[in-house]
Length: 318
Image (cartoon, rainbow, N blue to C red; front, side, top):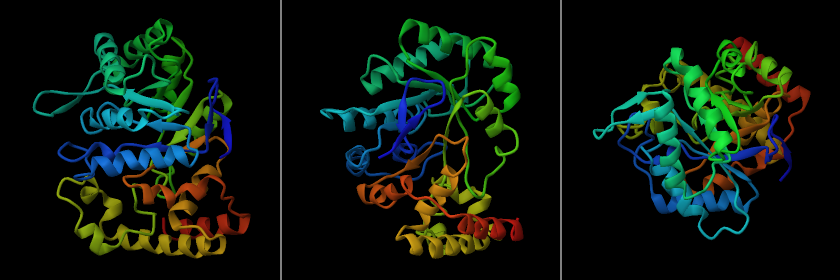
């Protein structure tokens, strides 16, 4: 699988990497419902076997469980992929999640992630959310200290806007950004992506398939039967009137995919990767067969005509 330079870091990463949000399991605020740990481990190993050379996780996914599964999956793997994780979302004994960017919290979270991941250094450590906004400078100072101490190799942010990145770059360079980006969520195109391109900030986009909505596997019936603790039940994109419109878009992606022998999900990912400022995309998988169904996106290149067909649909249905 082709690798590309990841912004100002010294890493060369594949155009798609494994996202481990969903495998965290059920019972927490942003859960995807109950998951099978053995299937999750198999999905990670399948991703590595097929050539993905990085895994993105976060401490809060499953309240630590996702990081533990990543460590379990990578035991005995000869060519270990890069491991990226995140801080700033903490939880109490009852599982209540809050945001904290105080120096001591960031440092403590890093130690806990190192322990769960069973590594001596984290390849990329990211501030998950810029909350509280008034503490982002203090949090970024702690991140820079962790890099100097060798606990993390590179530092980046997730869900930051341009103004926030400008504020913290005075403390230490912002090496990477992880924003949401897909056909249904394009807010980063106007300012954030050009800024990253101008400042050599690597971009790994999350939710390129809009959390499963653009895979071709979703239907009104499946949405109605999502587990009670699946966060998508409360998302407007998964509810009418948007759901029907979004599934029409999936029909178009399916038509385009047939011409390439690819799935609608692979077309959705390739669309995200078409943007020059996007280094790579994070693709989730809960089972090995789901990984098989998206791997082709890394090599898929959409024609100008196909991109125009997608754009026309989006313009008509915005």
